[in-house]
Image (cartoon, rainbow, N blue to C red):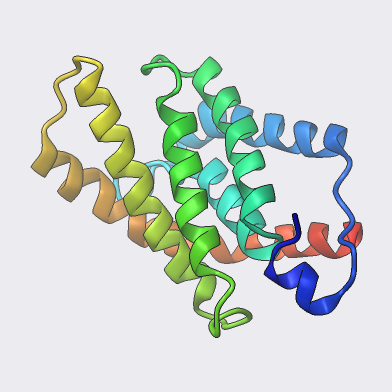
Length: 175
């Protein structure tokens, strides 16, 4: 099945080497869980994996973005103490929302990465809290929204640009 950008251009897209993608996602997962907690900004940790997945989804398509979300989410789930699958599901939902909105008139806009990161962060955090609640963990909704989601949205909207540029460089290398 071809997606909108492939059928319009009429060119078959190249794919990234799965070993390279796996190594990149493993490095991001290790950075996310071991290094980033030492760099609190606005009282929260930047969501590197989420931003990598959002960037790749914007640059490629929803199919590849969800693949990266699935692989990266499983790696983070294995490294976290939360409910297994919560990160994977949250990442996949945020990638899906980002990917469905990206093939539009806004493609290539300079504010698209920031807007996509805000949307993805809100979906990611909301889905994660809902999954934790259904798995029996007590998560205060208002505190989670005000002290985690809102600062994460601001932080991720700023940090997405260097990550997006790195992913754009990688995207050009595999094209």
